[in-house]
Amino acid sequence: MFGTSIPINMIKGSMILFYVDILGLDVRAYGVVMVIYAIIDAVDNPVLGHLSDRTRSRYGRRRPWLLVGAPMLAACMVAFFSAPASLEGIGLVLWFAIFAILCEAFDSMLNANYGALLPELYPRERDRAVANSLRQGFQLVALVISLAITPLLTTQVFGTEETTEGFQTTAIIYGVIALVVIAFMALSARENPRYATHERPRLLPSLWSIVRNPMFWTVGLTGACYGVAMALVLSGIQLYVRYSLGLPVANALYLQGIVILISACGLAVWTRVVARRGALWTWRLAFAILAVSFAALFFATDLVTAIAAGVLVGAGWSGMLATNDLIVARVLDADAARHGAHREGLFLSAFGFFARLNGIVTGFALTSLGVFFGYNSGDDPGTDPGLAFRVYLCVYPFVLTAIGAVAARLVSVPVEPPPDAEPVEPPPAGPANEPDVERTP
Image (tube, rainbow, N blue to C red; front, side):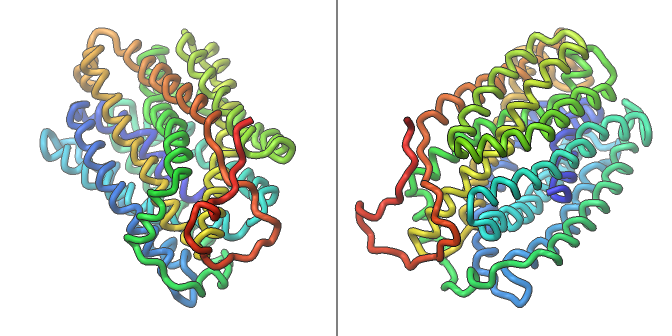
């Protein structure tokens, strides 16, 4: 998680600052590219996950894809932040579009395969919760580097607030770190060979089975409210600091740092809550806290009050990190038990369809700043960019997480399977074979 988080979070956290505010890419072009990028990514995700599930090799199903995806993502990230400063107009748009799409494709390849290992290696929810907390803790360490420290490196250590050289140097460093870590993990992991003995699943029947599963839609759409909200926060926080708080971008280090620190410290607490009350109850509570935190952040007027609100954001985010993947894993367990095949790669990639909404929503959200507030780029920021990014970073995420908190109260998920349960053959079709679910009280 440490290795996979560094590249994609630098990309998502700095792309608006780099392309829109520094290079002058128009937000309308940005929005169009994000919609196209999301559509392409929604198509390639299931294909990548399906290919992973069908892979049979002496190295396992997941490891070969991890070893291929890591160097490709690192190379594309460096290219993404190496756009020549002389590029303008359609040339800048094409460079942004090509490398944004490639970075997301290789990130999807990595995460479909890495994510599939969690339910495979840890079938019991208590073990799964501890393993998930550990990996989320390493993700938060990566976020300190890729989000909190990046503005300092790109605008002060290796470059300035008006130049792009610092981004390229930082991307090279992060790419090397990610490549080494992912390769070490992939070569060290030991997959369960039993899961590769089943018949290779077919793409279209498998997809049809997944989209007919009601839990795919209820859990996926509810989780998307959280995912899109955090995508808005990660992509806009540097410009929130610059325009809404009126501070140098490097000060994002302190705000992001406190949010990540609280999130990391809270993981142990949330894991204990999961052990006592279950993943579903804890997930609902975390959703509600996260929604309230964005309302508090809207009223921050300086770095001190923003950090105070950031403590609440970190608490809610920590709860979501500790539980969201556990809810998804319950759905994967039920699918494996019902159909007698482990196709976590395809199922997680199908869930990735909802994650692809991030690109569409962030594109429309940024474009809306031009419509409502006149912010079109760093060269044309409009009359009130401070309010624009307060809305982008606080109001939009609040609305999304409030919807998610309500929806989470209505979601039902499968009960935890018995410890060390063996996979079963698919039962005959019929209403009597629907999986048991944990009902809303």
